[in-house]
Image 1 (tube, helix red, strand yellow):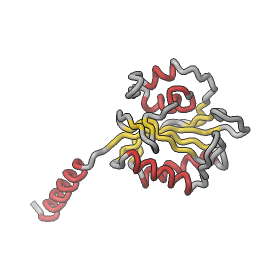
Image 2 (cartoon, one colour):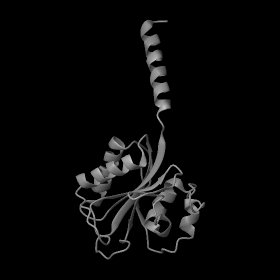
Image 3 (tube, one colour):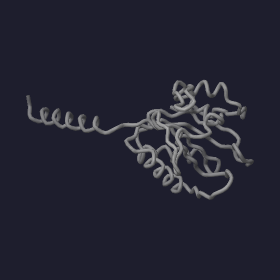
Image 4 (cartoon, one colour):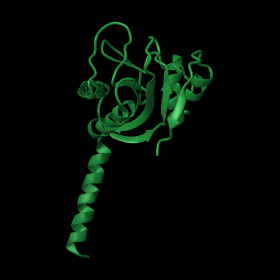
Length: 187
């Protein structure tokens, strides 16, 4: 055997072993935008997430819906993504806030408002987290069709760790009847 091949195999095995030692977590995120070039805002967020949080394994189609919880003439575009990450939930939250800020989002206390980009953590593995900074699973995901429709597309069999129901079942039983329209398919 030639020594280059042996070195390649040796380095591959070392890297494979190292990568298997890093805990990989599944995080589901919802991206939304109703200001500016909404499609571009979602696309930029996807690129930033893949560079700063982890590998995107699945993406839903893009869906359009009216704002939830406030009135505005600009509809939202939303998509769900599944990311494989070694980051903790709080590290993800820090990265999300940085991505939102980079895209022009200014967080102000008070009621819901229009925004260039909004990124929410829906699920992190099957963990339940409740602290001052973070609530996972997302508190209201089962009440919002604009969340459930794209999430069901990529994770219909995912079981909500508190409600013990599949996402597809949550969507069927959701009392929110807001129209959520697919505007494109993810390629």
